[in-house]
Image (cartoon, rainbow, N blue to C red):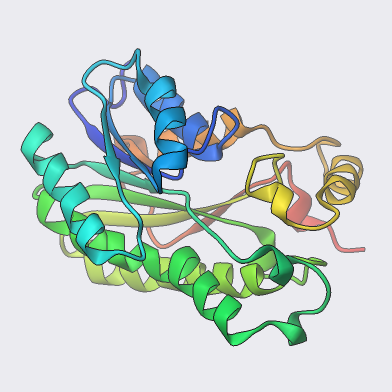
Length: 255
């Protein structure tokens, strides 16, 4: 069953084969989607090009969300190659490493603004650019984490940014709903990705959740990818403004 036949998607956040964004891309590609990928900086360009080399009609474009001209150029490249856009998977976040350890109260102004711009503001920024290409509607999915709702040691400013991201999801869902564009967030459990390694003591967190979650294990990237596939497909046509937990049930646990 090709749930995304004739659909065009744009994937933000692929760094390597372990990226959640890459798991999402694989799930969507396997179901017939044509995909465009963004990269931030020349250092990641080669990785993305190697991963996508065997995907038919894949497009790889530069897009640093702190550079508005690059954002606009990326969407123009989508329009030129495909003529439309059906879904976006937004899986980008960043905070300086020193802000992901110790106490939140010591967060610098620079670190706070950086985390908010890249991890939260980039969602409405991307949504605004995507709207004109989603003439018949579409779906936007972003990636959050439980640290947006509860305090997670060392997650600090990223938790605050993810809280803003989840609020943005709801406001965007209201704004874009009249255009038949749905906006949802996936709150994935921790996965040993390149970005996750920036959080101090990530190994301890993975071990704890693996022991305490109802399924007694950690989530796998492919499971997050399958959820993204569902959300961008017509099977989720009445779902918008939601944050869906894909964390082996850990979020329901109290003490």
